[in-house]
Length: 155
Image 1: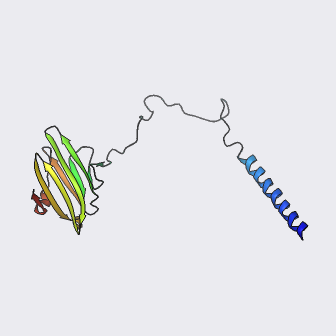
Image 2 (image 1 turned 45 degrees about the vertical axis):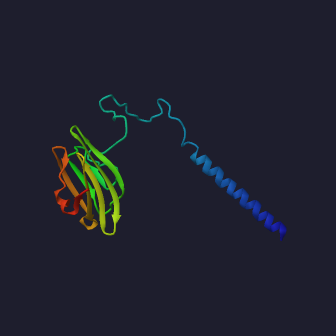
Image 3 (image 1 turned 120 degrees about the vertical axis):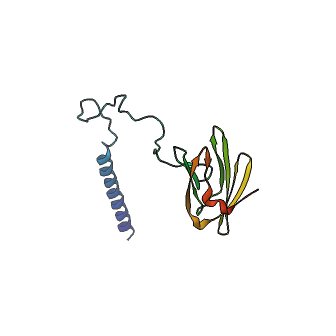
């Protein structure tokens, strides 16, 4: 019985070794270098059609302003706020005439708490998270927050 078991193990080892050899020989050509005249067609890029260097970013990708819940577009003509997600973070929008700084505190119960400061005026807003995503236009370098002003108080 001992010899039969040993014979079976040797047979399995030889069989697996043979399979490994077949696999290696089949994949041997994968990493082969391409030489000139080998029939492989390549295109040469000229300076005009070559892609620009650097990271690829979609033209309309949102710009995160300190919190993933507060973003702006590339034109910086609106601010998009996701009151439902309300992910904490702080940031600012910088303009020639000054900046608007804000801090999204996070959810407190069903309210999204946001503090912002414009030209030294501090405001705290408790916006119901159910309001979802809101877009605020930026006019004269100031976000127009009229849609949520009833939820805000000056500090």
